[in-house]
Length: 313
Image (cartoon, rainbow, N blue to C red):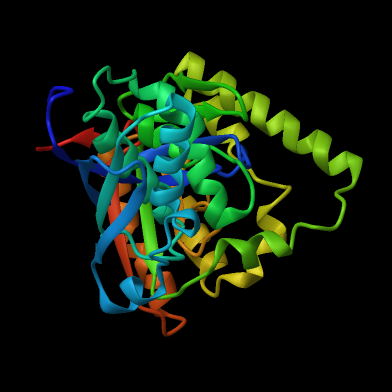
């Protein structure tokens, strides 16, 4: 793809935000549903959304006004910051369910940014798109957190602060099971249960788990990861919002998971395992936990070092 191209199509993968212990800071991608964006470079100095494809219910709920759409706002930010004389027309193809905990709002803006970047006369390094992705994601979440957009831009595991995006090491043997129940949990509703202050002792305990978890990644040490992957801060307040979560987590741990928690704001649940074989064995049991509550669910098994967003044609 060159700067002379007039259109580009890109995908962005699903992601697991927070990874339990890294609220609004950590995330990783996995091989599951994907969003696609086709972007056309236009002469008019504006951003417009020409179409949104996907399931009818999803399409109906997504705004067409660029400033209220994560993809549209991200490309507006790109144009404004770079002072571009031209504009972009976007068509989104939504493959990630809304309110699933898979980073669907983030995937739209990342796919659009990666496609638009390929149309620039001087494309930026992909990591340099991070500030624009934060601007887009803020439309959906009312905050500038990068735990979904960051790993989508880099692939694998990322540490995403307000002003830094860093790749983190990921042992190749690490695999994730991500189970999506037939439920919808909007991020705003899930964040509403976190407004009350947390006791200092709880914050200190959480920081200890995060330190063990990060050390485990750098040392490729399964025991350290197991010791660290415990969310004692956010998960206890959100667990009741997802019927079947407690049982699905218990099923994952019973079958050897290094840890298990909500994927992003939920309702999806993930477990980390030290091998593909363990992950494959646990997936049916996690599904069964939701089924026992009368809830259908689907599982995805993927390396934790998942794909990054990329131009596909």
